[in-house]
Image 1 (cartoon, rainbow, N blue to C red):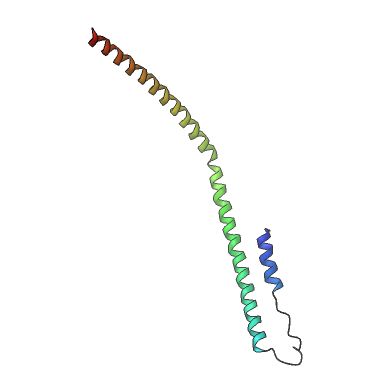
Image 2: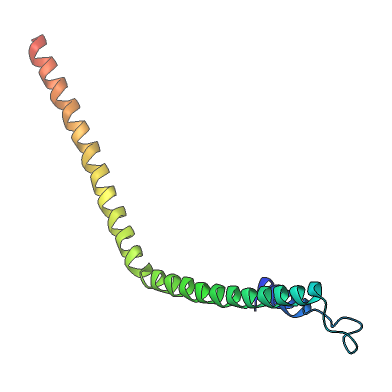
Length: 112
């Protein structure tokens, strides 16, 4: 369990209101009853939040797992790109040399 989850659980459990000091002799005051209701509502909301965060975490883990399944395909395409890129650079270099040779030949023919 992560530290934030543990912290959320601690908040939910540690905020349970203590009974008023004179709970045996008097009914709860309006303040204490409203506080108890709000604290219970907050605890329920934190439990819901924790459940939703756990669901999100499982979803993210499954997305990462699917992404990891494509790592071998990505490596293959990277190799293909590297090979094709290297061949393209060689063709560009040889094409530039041929263009230089043609220009030199044309210049020599015009000069003669």
